[in-house]
Length: 623
Image 1 (cartoon, rainbow, N blue to C red):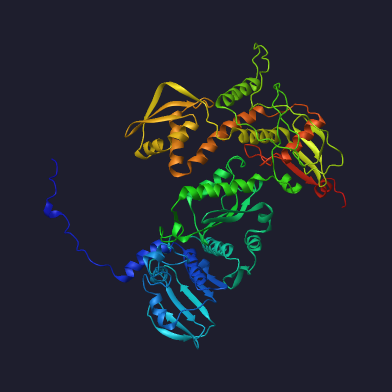
Image 2: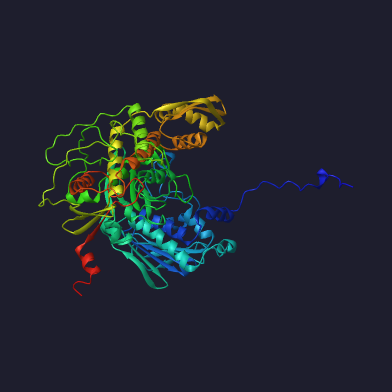
């Protein structure tokens, strides 16, 4: 027999609404602000920098769990304000809503010290310039006492999470917590090269950075190899200024552990910025490798909201798409220059090409542009010419069936591989990639330069040369679309429908005609003629999601480049193709005048340098 339903009288009595005790409120805040010892270090160093410190000392015990001491030589806290500093939402950083909307300091929420004090034993000793001696306050008892120290502030935090043992169980080993604390100070050190930092653990010096230039500080913190394997850049657009260093693709790492972004001196993690940087590396990174970079963003404080997360690790931009576009452009420009062009001290530039009929095996090379050679900008091709070019390349490079008749080479379109007149390379020319001397197995080109031996993957190198020229010629040409006999409809979210309506023109440039059938249904009525998309619905959803979140023009550009990359791969010279010395030298000159020539379209390296020391080491010379 079924049990009777519980009587309403058996329900628990409603609990009374009441105010929480101040200590419990602070412990709740601590759950958001203080995740681990590194969170305490970050907050205390923030306060030290806001106080105008020129030297910051961090002392740790047991990875920061037993003790954290942060000392600075800043302006100090007047003795009358010491008790107020420990109260919740008490701060000297802001006084009004207007100041909250244009925060220019590292800390401002006024909850860090109170939150830390609620889960630890904390004391503060501080002295101002006009004080006879320092004063120490115990955060738990509020007792004031005299102390000895020079101008500045010392904050001592002991037994973190002693009052909340459940939180302490989530901490890792002392070594792991120490590593997080060191990383927190490293982020401050990179952003403030004018400030000296030192970290001690268990009485031993872990790291120390003296005041230095920005470039020297980056080398001191990340290693001298980082500066050698990265390229400095600066970019400005209206109220936005970007600077930093972009790691070279060949120095990419397996982990994203050297990616640093600061907004107005505050270290942040922002998906919008990460996406912009990753998209700039798209056709120069191989596989899942992660780029290294240091990016400083300076923007008017009123254009960014830093009050969106208790730990201040996230921000929100008023014009996110403008930020995305500027960051992406800054990194693209930084990566455009190849190492060979840098060695030559010339700006990368693409040479004019003569459009002539060509056969399938014709090498796509050009006479290098040097001196006062005239340059005529190429005429952008029409959509029909783009389509015919891909069809021709696919037919030319598709392996022939045994019974397939030979197909004569068609006339080349403006995007096909044209022939040019080659000039012999003079022996006394000092080319960055040297003079070709041989070809190995129809795959690699050997060249000699002043440093030693240059080895070039001819297919990868030629693929990049073709790709960059195709990109320059395509411009803003609309991709040919192919109407579908039966439109494909699918259920869509309100956001996808709104994005389809807002970015209809951009989708049309990609050859996609996406129209709303209802408030929750979209229909794809045409697809790109150059792409055999197997899943149009997935393709459309992906594009709509990116356009809704990021800059639509970058989405359009990336989709167009994927098509051109396919064409470049088909149009590049193949392995086992025997080249003459003139053809090899022409390819080397093209590489020197082509942007991003150090990697192919898939991110693989196109050439390597072996200097004389490395060659001597191979044969034990000088030993």
